Image (cartoon, rainbow, N blue to C red; front, side, top):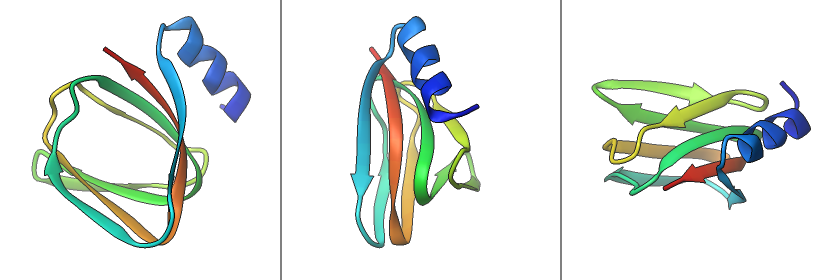
Length: 88
């Protein structure tokens, strides 16, 4: 799925849409969000850790995170740009 199709699908499903930009390496310790997340990596990479596992997402890949799901976020040295949908 390309960026435009992903954004159109988010709008159709009632998500608020934003562009996330985290420059450079960073690690966010375990936390959760009060909303559901559906995001596509545009540039760079993000590694998410949850339920004892980790997975790295790269450009064109989509990830979802349930509301309230405890997780960690690790960004590589190039940082990451994501197209993020949030649903409360």
